[in-house]
Image (tube, rainbow, N blue to C red):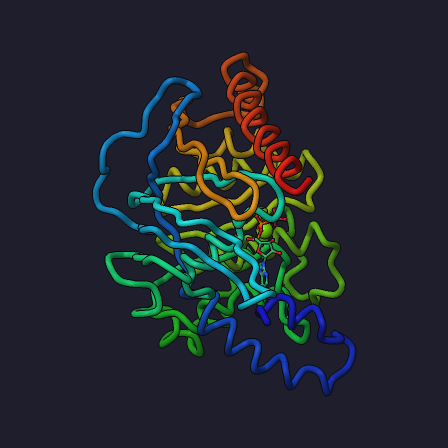
Length: 326
Ligand SMILES: Nc1ncnc2c1ncn2[C@@H]1O[C@H](COP(=O)(O)OP(=O)(O)OP(=O)(O)O)[C@@H](O)[C@H]1O
Ligand SMILES: [Mg+2]
């Protein structure tokens, strides 16, 4: 069972349940934090904007070659992801969009090493996934805060685990690292909430804290699974700008899963549209709007046209899926 699902099954007010969660913490550290991303490149139809994906930008951060995932076996087998080939260059910001259940989170889990491909290969940072831990930040679809730790300590967790921070953790946790956590909290509108516990925060606040934890160790790769899904529109738009600023400043490789097409167009340099389950990439196109992009830009005709294109792909994918099921 995935870390998040197990954690959700844990009663946050039952101290005996916390023992399980200590194991989960280890699992979280061992797996989630060496998750990764990169840019993927497929054989796109590349209809919208008439902008084909440029040839082989170097270096490649993430590469899926004919990677597919089927969960379970025999009669219970669930094909989640069709054979997928995708290459993502270092520093690219890629959004994955597609109907619910099409395999978007599965791709993130593949890249992070939380799931092994049934066929094919996943290479991150030049090595096959699981061969080596990488400094990756991951924000899971369901915020997975450890309930016995304050928000501040939850956010500092990657610093406790990942070098070069780990060896300095004892020395700096009450000074520099704490300041770092609180600076991020302030950036996402959670100033003063560092000393609260996760169960004292709303779902949207937890998602913001989740984003801080993904960013605190300045990862070269960031895997974001609907990180703004539970937020109101205005907070969401504020966080788009924050994330865009961070990306422009640090140019980490980002793989963002989202159902919000405006969000994808605002943030990404490239958008991959997936078919219904078992997902495959239907379209892979560059988004060339200049940066920094503003919320006002998202209401301009080119932006709206892009959204409509994306929407049409997804409507078609959903229709094809419903017809297939009938
Ligand atoms: N551990 C698992 N065991 C069995 N089936 C799974 C498992 N994880 C995912 N699936 C199935 O694989 C398919 C793809 O799941 P995934 O979570 O990748 O979808 P998604 O595109 O992220 O969907 P959503 O947009 O709803 O989050 C789904 O049909 C799901 O039921
Ligand atoms: Mg998902």
